[in-house]
Image 1 (cartoon, rainbow, N blue to C red):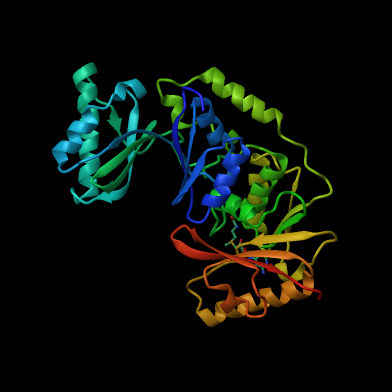
Image 2: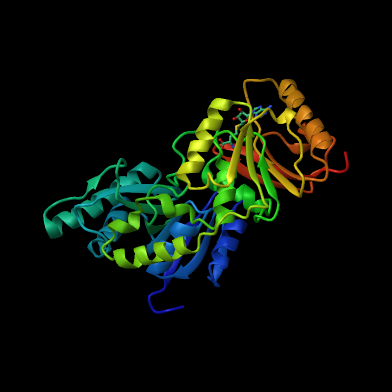
Length: 381
Ligand SMILES: C[S@@+](CC[C@H](N)C(=O)[O-])C[C@H]1O[C@@H](n2cnc3c(N)ncnc32)[C@H](O)[C@@H]1O
C-alpha cells in the first residue's frame, strides 16, 4: 500500500459481492473485504479511475472522507459537516447532490438530515468564498454519499456520479431490460469466460450478449462514458486518467472466432435495437442477433451456455406463466442436450421447471423484484 492510499468502497447489487470482489482481485488488488452490497479496499487516485473504467459489476466507487460519530441532534450534524474541509475536495461553483442510505436512531427524518448537511456545506462555502454551490440532481457534478447508522454517518465522495450501469452504449431498450451491472453479474455467476458459445435465446435489447462480448474482448465497460464525478474533483488528473484509458484500450482483444455469442428474440423490432446497441458498444463484429422464436432454435455444435431472462408478466396468472415456463423446460431438454442453462426468474425454479434440478440457485434482485438465478445441466435428448 503506498502513501497516497485511502479506503475505497465499491458498491454493487445484492448477491454480486463475490463476483465483484473477484473482479477487483483480478486487477491486482490484494486487500479486499466483502460487505453487504459492497466491497472495501485500499488504493490511490489512479485506482479510483481504473475501477470506474474496468469493473463490470460495480455500481459506484466511493471515497469515504469522514466518519462522524455522536450525532445526537441536527445541530451536531450541522457543526460536524461544516467543519469538514469541503473546499479541499471541490470548488464552490460545482453543482452538488446527495445520496442518503440507512437511518439515524437519533434524528428520525432522513430528509431533515440531508437538508442540514446541505445547509452546512453551502454555509461553509458561502462564509469562505461568498457564494453557495448549486444543489440539484439534474446535471450534478459532485455527488456526496451519506451512509447513516445508529448515531453515526460515513460521508463519501461518489467518484462515479451516474451509477456505473449507465455505460453509455445502450441507447434503446425493450420492455423489461436487465440492467448492465446485473447482466454482467449473471455472466460471471454462470462462470462464462469466453470458453463456450454464449446464447441468450430471449435477448431483448441485447444486454447479456453485449456484456458477454465486452468480457470476451476485454473492453472496459466504462470506456464509453464521457463523464465521471471524479473529473470535477480538485485533484483530478486529466493526463493520468487518459493514460489509464489508453493503456486499457490497448489491451482490447480481437474476438475469438471459434466462440459464438448469439442473441435471439422473436420480436424483430427489439432485435434491431439490440444490433444498434451492440454497434455502440463496438461488439457488433462479434454478437450475432437473429430474429427467431426460441422454440424454433436448437443447439449449435460445440459447448453451449445459455443465459437468459424470459418475460415475467405479472398480469398473467401463475398457471399461464407456469405453462410458458413448462414449454421452455421441454424445449431445453429436447433441443439443447448436454448444455449449461442459466435462467433468471421471479418464481422459484422448482415450481417453474419441475423436471430439471438446478445445480446452483442464486438469490438476486432485478430492480425491486426478488429473483432466482438458476443453473441447470441438460442431459442427453
Ligand atoms: C425480459 S425480456 C429480456 C430482456 C433482455 N435481457 C434485455 O436486457 O433487454 C424477454 C424477451 O423475451 C422475448 N421473448 C418472449 N418469448 C419469446 C420466444 N418464444 N422466443 C424468443 N424470444 C421471446 C421478448 O420479446 C422479450 O424481448
